[in-house]
Length: 183
Image 1 (cartoon, rainbow, N blue to C red):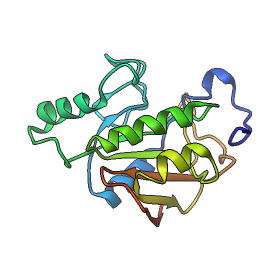
Image 2 (image 1 turned 60 degrees about the vertical axis):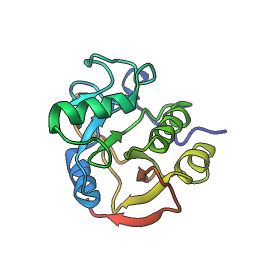
Image 3 (image 1 turned 180 degrees about the horizontal axis):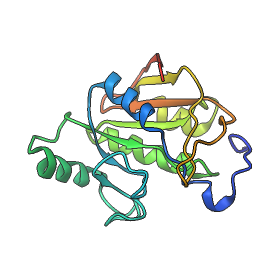
Image 4 (image 1 turned 135 degrees about the horizontal axis):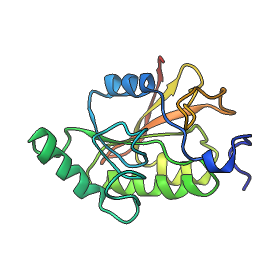
């Protein structure tokens, strides 16, 4: 299978791009749940107090329980019952092979009773989309313009080579409702 798209981004920076805050704010407003766990972040890019990645206690999101982190976040930060109160956020690395792995884990997380918003390429013709996004997404938000992700130094990048989608994976899954997201 061919990669999603080609890029001129240096290999060292390829998977470190940040989601602009206005995109995150629009998603939170539309869905109506706060982000309480960022499963793919660094200290500089996280969208939640609790996150996995460089700079966090748990650097490898695949070696820890996302479910436990959600419960811990609610108990510590919100002092609320953790079910159905907040969501996790995921803007996974887009480099070859990563999207299948990350979306599979997000699907399993949703099937375990949680909500997770996944910012991914809108690539419905790919196996990872058909196996992981389609069956578990209840809502797919299509931004009204291309998202200009932030480079590792914080400056906006060029327009990406393809469209993005923000997919809300839920315990009950699809079929998904598609909506435009004004950003």
